[in-house]
Every structure is written in structure tokens, then in C-alpha cells.
Amino acid sequence: MSAGERIEGHCLCGAVTITLDDPKHEVEICQCAMCRRWGGAFYAGQTGASFSIAGEDAITEYRSSAWAERAFCSKCGSNLWFRFLPTGNRSFSAGLFDAAASHGIEKEIFADERADWCRLEGDHPRQTGEEVIAEAKAAGFSFD
Ligand SMILES: [Zn+2]
Ligand SMILES: [Zn+2]
Figure 1 (cartoon, rainbow, N blue to C red):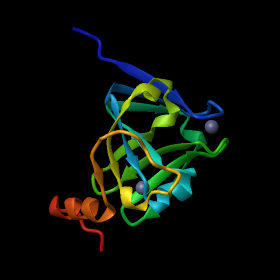
Figure 2 (cartoon, helix red, strand yellow):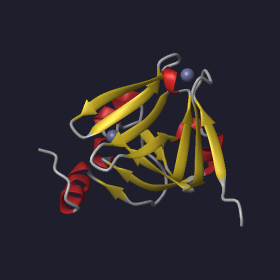
Figure 3 (spheres, rainbow, N blue to C red):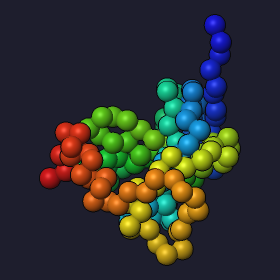
């Protein structure tokens, strides 16, 4: 039996810690206006095969739209995760994990909504908001 890779992250104050098993070595960037308002620039999502969360008492979840929820630490304000409600899938804020600082970019979504000062280098795939929504609808999700 071989042990998989495990990375640990925590919020600014340390009240919440998140452990990810078999993390992807790439993050997904969202440049939509909601993510910019939420985090100040763009959102970088880190996922893994499984996760555990400690510090539930300090977590506030905010229903940001009909299909999504965002969570943050009630003590220090660090953003913790984005959850897509139709699937229940979460992506965790990449900034929580020191190890994620060296990860690449899987793709950049809502690239057409980015702020002028949020240009990211590289030739990773970029999708407009329209393309992301069309892809999600084709996969059976509804946003109406
Ligand atoms: Zn905190
Ligand atoms: Zn977004």
C-alpha cells in the first residue's frame, strides 16, 4: 500500500484547517465579477480526490447564487471554498495551501470578465463566461 500525497492548508488565523488527499497539481482560475468582489482579484480553486475540514465552528457559509455557496472563516475572513450546489463539489481556495503556490493553471474561466490588472501569463486554456455556461448546460445543469 502506498500513501498518496496529502497537503494541508489553513486560514489566516488558523481556526480552520483543510486537508486534501491526492491534490491536483493545477488550479482553476475564475475571473468572474463575483469572484473578484469576493476575493479582491480572482479565485484560484484547488481540488483533490478527498478532503477533511477541521474548525467547523469558525466557518460561515454564504449562498451566493441559486447554484453556489461560498464559505469563509468567521474570525479572520479568509475565503475557504466555493461549492457548486448541483453536484456538491467544492474547490478550496488555493491560497490556503502553501504547497499550491507551485501548482500550474489548469484553465482560466470567465476570462472575458477579468480586470485589466489581472492578466495571467501562460498558454493554459481560457474560456469566456458564455462558453462555461454553454458547457454546463450541455452537461445538464440549469441556470435559469
Ligand atoms: Zn481564520
Ligand atoms: Zn467566479
